[in-house]
Image (cartoon, rainbow, N blue to C red):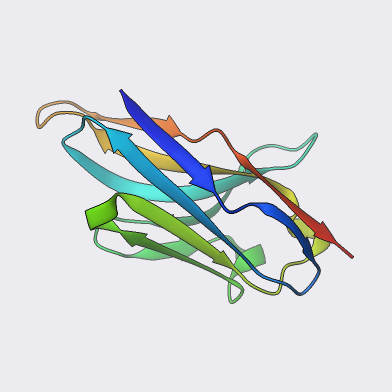
Length: 121
């Protein structure tokens, strides 16, 4: 089994910064793309940022220029640096990893447990 453990959420004032981390552990062949999603109460889960195994990134328009996704493949960890936070960024943030458990199996989506980000105005 594969586990994703997130950390780094919390309460911050508008304009402040937070850094989220998500570490993958367990038995697997390779982690392909990783990403961060968020889901606010009553809303659908949305993609925030995405990074391939080669380091190519993509961002939601609402966070471009403020958030930066990165990964450390040696540590199987993905990060999300969030700057200039706004009240609209408040949500539960979920880590996602597309994992191939063996050489010959398809990749499977794994999710972290979620970490709360609260932004006070």
